[in-house]
Each structure stands twice: as structure tokens, then as C-alpha cells.
Image 1 (cartoon, rainbow, N blue to C red):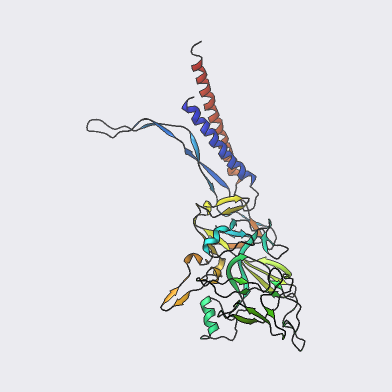
Image 2 (tube, rainbow, N blue to C red):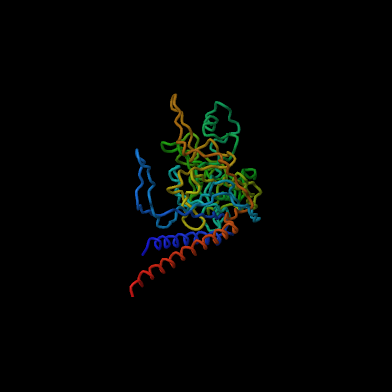
Length: 432
């Protein structure tokens, strides 16, 4: 066969690949969060019939003579520009303005630092809801990762500069005036546990009959004591999955004794927790009117009337957003070609803080800071648009125009095959 036929066959295959891309774009024209693809053509192998030469003293030079053998797929790129905002009326639906991603994973996914971020899957579809176990999930059930609200171990409204608690809070980037803070441990976001029925034995009822909490009040996780060389602090619930308290409830109604330094400011072995005690069954609160704001805060009101802030949905930024790898459905992963992955919260809510509540440690005249990769960004131009989803970036008019051009290109390549076949037929029939 001649080279023309090989070139035409290469053209047919490549045009069919382009038609596959166009067909996928058109099929997903109404898919929320879909990023349109674009295929580019690339010249294929060349054969040199005559090499080029430079000019001499008496003769000029000549260019090389080469014949190409068709085309191939050059690249298939993602159009990562923002889609149009599509209002849905659901309070937890949200769209990310900018090139960031939601992060999702499973309950057993543990993020010990920036190196573990690539374990998470990325998506642009913010169809969020609360499941029957109180977790913030997407509609397909995958858990949404972010930073949860915890009890402030430095809470002391009477603390003043110079106090040990005040200085510890200052180093951690939080205030002693706030009863609750946002932990920077990246993990699934869940509703707080529901408080147990208050009694004198668990410290919920005073001798005069007054209550320190109501049944169903929110009980937030504690912030564990610093551990490891990187001074990391993880969230610790007051009750485990089997319904066992992390401590013992005092008989005199003075609170719960917690062991192992959990939640302590100075890492002492024991301290007393005097807040609401969670229900033994580990029930989560009943929360109404949950919504998300432009900074990613999930807020609502529990049955007892108290305001609840679950935490902040985190956003992932990668060096090359169009270099992420599709892993199925609307999900991507930060693999080779996407660069490094970082975490941020819009509005600078957690700006200046580090993953897992790490802090700068003073060591004599030197300050030992966590790696810059562990820092939580201020948003990088990203923000949430609540109340709707992102529309597909596939444009029907553009795809139809590309389809016509591709069809004509495919048709022209089939003509080359036909003409080449006719020429070969004439060659075979030369001698009769």
C-alpha cells in the first residue's frame, strides 16, 4: 500500500477520537460541574527523501525533502474555566468560584500532613447534604472534607496577657474569649453529638434544680494535646463508636475526668471537662435550616434553639488544574501532571494557621515553623456561591461546529483511501 493510504487511516482514527471527545461533551451539556474537553491534532511520522544542506562558496543550500504519514492525537485538554451558576434552591448546594475543588474521601482516610492530601478525590460538584449519621456528604454518599468546630482548650474569658493560657492561645492563633474554635485537622465534617439528659450525677443539673445544659444541646469534639515532633493536635470525641466515654463521669457532679492530656493546654496527664456530656448512644443533634455561606461555613440551629457551626468546607488548589486525572464520574485526583496540592479556606478564615493545629515552636533564639506546605491558604481567589450548582462548560454551538468540521475531515480522509485503492487497482490491472 502507498503512504497516502497509511496517512488517511491515521487521519480516520484521529478524527474518530475527536468525534468521541465531541460526543462526550454534548452528552454532558447538562451535567453539573462538567468540564468540557478539547482535542488537538498533531502531525505524525515524517520520512526524509532528501536531506537538507547549507550553502557553500559556489552553490546555495537546499531544504530537506520530507513526506508525512498522517496525524495523531496531540492532547485532550480540560476547560477548567468557571461554569454558569445554576440556582437550585437547596441550602447546602454550592458552587466554587475559581479553580479550586471540593475534597472527598472515606471515614478511614487520615490526613497526617500535606503529603497525604493526594489520597483525597477532587470534584467541582457541590451537591451537599447531611446523611443519616450526621456526616456532610455529596449526593452519591462520598464524605466531604473540611475543618470542624471543636471546644477551645484555651477558653478563659478572664485571661489577660502574660497568663500561661493567654500566651498559649496567642501562639496557636486563637483567642481565649472564644468558647469554640475551628480545628485545622482536615477530615470529614459531622454534626456535633447530642447532650445527654442532664442529671446531678453527670453535672448537668445543679442542687437547686437549675440546668447547665439541655437534652440535645450540641457537644463538640475536644482538641487533643500536642503529640509528635511536629506538635500536631488532633480532634478527639468525648465518646467512641462503641458508646464508651473518653474518661469517667464524676459521682459528685463536678464533670468528667479525661486522661491522657486530651484537650489540655499544657499536656498534663489528667484534667476535668465540665461541659455537656454526650448521650451514651452517640446520637448527633437534630439540626434545622443548615446552610453554607461564601466562606464555606456550615451553619444551622439545633432543636434546643442554639446556633451551630459545623465547621468550614475546605478547598483544594493544584498547580495545574487542567492537569488533574479523571478517576470516574465527576471525580479527579492530583496525580502526575497536576503539580502540588494545597488547602485553603476562602475569606482568610484560617489564614496563618497550619494543618493539624501545628504552631511555630520557639527554640531559644530560633523559631521552628511547620513546612510551608502545611500552611492553610486564604482562598487564592476562590469563594463559595451558595444555593446552586455549577453548570457544564460544554457549549452546544461550539460542539456542533466542531462536529461538522470533524465530519468533513473524516469524509476527506475516506476519499484518500478510495482514490488510493483506485490507483492500486489500476496498477494491478496493468497486465491482463
